[in-house]
Image (cartoon, rainbow, N blue to C red; front, side, top):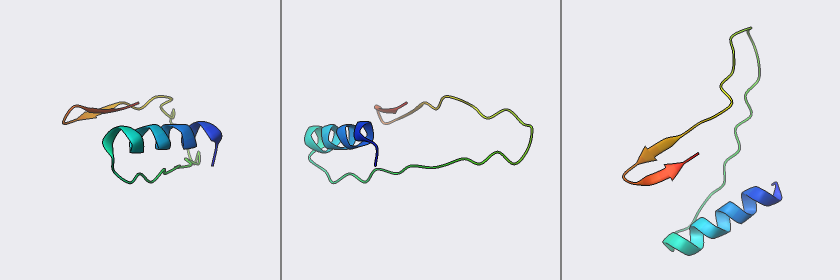
Length: 49
């Protein structure tokens, strides 16, 4: 697991006092359709970028 991912996991676990599970999703290019380079989500005030 990349170091940065471990740091984010530890920070989230400390802040929310809940277990966290890092997930890495690899997207394989199977067509010429452009793959987005960013993701953002906000659910119940919890932001993911």
